[in-house]
Length: 584
Image (cartoon, rainbow, N blue to C red; front, top):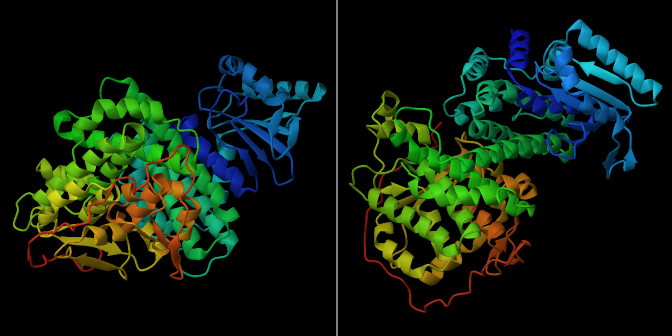
């Protein structure tokens, strides 16, 4: 059955849909990828460049199922086929530019006999001119090779395979069920028990192909946001597996980089499309109800892309489109539950970089004020906690059937993102804002889930973790609050995230319950460095640490004068009830 699924998947996707899985296939077969499937004006007919297991420099040109199926289509791309064999390759790994040893044209369709004959003749002509021979790979070749990559790392339980079929069968017009995809991938990977580095690599390769199958509908419908979310979920499980198994970086980093690059490309397409329109399209008649949530998602993920580029220190290619989009749309963003909080934090940070720090600070202040007001003890209409995804909360607000499960649950008297918001404002020395919020803040129980291990920060399933509930101190001290807001413990974040911090802005977007004050401190530290942070390493040593380098300096956290007196609030609330174990 899987063979038929793979064959149909190859038939139904275009070039963009199978280029990442094909690259993963090459890596699983022992190729070292020098250039991944990123379209740019300097590729010269070569979508992918690798060093194959026999140390031969290989170049691949990928085409969709109908692009070269007949002679007319083939002739349309004759220039690319010539460049594929004739244009030299320049890369630091191979020194001076030279011709490839092997060149391939790849299609996920079936070539007609006359097309195969023409390709054979082109290959013979290349050899006569001392150029590399031209080989071709068709759908049937791809199916057999893709199945070989999976090996034993396939969904073994009926429920898991059914989940794959459900994802595969989706038309892709709606949102991606990220938690369902995450659960499916986690079931497919060996997180428990000792696994050899080779086994980890094979499992990661198989999971990449399964992710591509699951995203078929969203890829076909050009749902760029969902495609980006899917590859980010895969990148997340790769990081968790690497952390759990202490896998050597060479066994998992190429797959992570490939997935992150695919997500980045999808978000760039999303920003380009959204910024060029007059507004955001919502494929539903109830546009007014959905529009604010759509704005929050598109602007939030676009902002996270900018933050990742800033953390990497790379050219911020998303800046022009994102600036235009935020200026036009951010005023329409609507937060219906605390699961939308991480998106708003990303937007506020991006606005601080693009516009001014005051613009970003105003966004978080409004969010904190609304959250504290809505979630007061006994208040009706409190914001749902972050364990309830955005689509579920939206259904509740519209009184749809699948929102009924929230009708009997109460969220008043507690908040999961309030502490992170208060600290965010404190680090920016918004003392008056914090003082105006303090009375309402002290009436709430602040909740944060603490994972049982750093690796469990990368998943929602953790029965051994604990829910930390606390009340703000009375009386409140500005000095103590500021000191705590600048404490950063490196052990709170898995080592793989310190190795790949570009994933940090996306983590709370994919897993909203994982947005904690400590995680926001780390993201702030990387984006807005200052010498005021106190860094604690994994063995408990403390000391000031220089901030990471940035392309342009940020305002130090201590640039404003701090009043000497303490901010105080009078209240003596009783702690509200909150769950003590993590939801599944």
